[in-house]
Amino acid sequence: MQIDLVQLKTFVVAAEEQHLTRAAERLHISLSAASSHVRHVEECLDMKLFIRANRHLELTSAGKLLLEKAKLLLNEAGVFTSFAREINGKTEGILVIGASSEASSSGLSEVIARMRECHPLIGVDMRVRHSSSTRQAIKNGELDVGLILGRPIDTDFSYQQVDEVAFRVAGPIIWREKVENANWHELARMPWLTTSDSNMAYSVLLREQFSKRGLELNSAARFDNAAIGRSLLEAGVGLMLMRQEHINIGLQQGTLAVSPLIHERIPILVAHMFNRKDDPLICAFQNAANSVWPKLKTVRPNQD
Image (cartoon, rainbow, N blue to C red; front, side, top):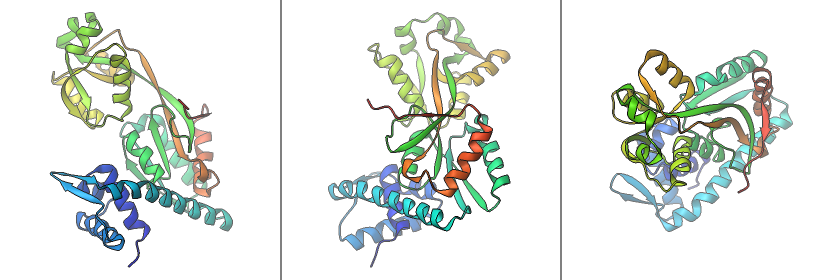
């Protein structure tokens, strides 16, 4: 028996998600198919890759060693396909793009429309992903291009900055006096809405702001979708970091109180693997992006 790339990708995604059901959802396959893929990889290698612990999966020692090799192999498969397209001079195929549910304000839809005008043989598969998940999916070849909220950190990525997003701390209007007058210690002790993924830009920004002051947030509830977070805030569950455009709406409607302590800006980046820069699909997207996003600028990954 041999392992194919689809089965290998399922192993990688299951390892990243630590959950077979979430892996199946992310790959748009059935749970039984995902289970079969992982089982096939284990049988071919004659080794256990996962330990089934309670409701999640944990990699075995062998699984951890093989995970990075699997990611490299999937990336090389993407490079191979890119090279084949380049040789053939074809600008057709399916471009898989990842972006968060907040991507509508970035102009990504206009970029896709422009690309389709110029290259009608290119199909697009859009996937809703948090930025941390988008980074991983680009690395393992699950995504071709991703829209990421956060700073450039992957040295093997090509990054361009689309825009910046302003964030501030907001709470329900009934807490107005407390929120507007709270110092850092008082703010940290109030109930907070935090994310379930510690690698999200939201979480990173919160850690930067409070941990450097020796403070730990009082997390009242967690969310994995910004719209759910805003709904919890409006219900009076806690404070959260909120994008400026949503703050403006809340202020106009009289539903939000805003702290004066945090004014932070995070870049919106479009990214792909650097070694795929000559892929005709990537180039077609890039040309459309340059025409829709006139302020698009190349940025280098942080080296620290």
